Image (cartoon, rainbow, N blue to C red):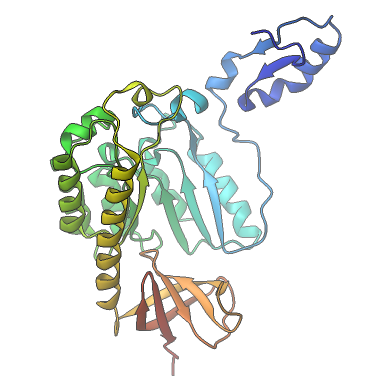
Length: 349
């Protein structure tokens, strides 16, 4: 690699060695090719002792693991972030206790695939239960789940702990088993539907959201129709739908039988239209029901309105009111407009 203006190349996971590398580079004669610094520590780095600077708020995001072992054919993450490695549960708990001291009342545990968390002693269900016991934390969320690793034990832990929110983001990506195999997703259409049935057996209500890719290489009309029917059958609360675009360095980028841009757009619009109808219908069914929101602050659209979230992750706007951030408030849903619910505070006598 001839790059005369580059002295060295190192990944972010080698940050602990940056002073050593800088001293070494500047003490040596410049070479025509940059030095590559990749050491074995990168495969173990979890940033466990690095505390991010956070702006005061209600929710804090806490990374509990790095990397991914799944190698989905469309995804670059395993190649750029490496294999999975998890922070110790105790280290995670210590950070969350510090967050409580800083005024946070909700945490979201993060990982490319949090369901595969394992610190050598605790799995993700164990970690969730431990976090829920931290005094001062009112709500616990997590993202993102891989369907193949979503266990019944984990769903039971959610059901048994009031502080753990009944919301699971479960990316299906496609409703066609054939396309799922091409994606290297390690589950079938039937497997996914069985996971959904298991979730709804234990959690009621539950917010179930997903990711979908349309126009994956080789996706025929029948494959797409299977995705449409799965969306119709599951009735997700919301879905993030994307047109496939090749990522250099991934296996799928080398696949033949690419779907045309126009066809990708058509499929994207059809799924989005269907999902909007489902979301509106499900939200209207909530009118008249009670729920508890965690107040996050002023609405983005109005300085006189307050917004918060139900445990199912649905946004509720309370018009013309003042409520403190971080407070749990019981409300009655009085209206629905697309993805947004409108509520009225239930005042206690």
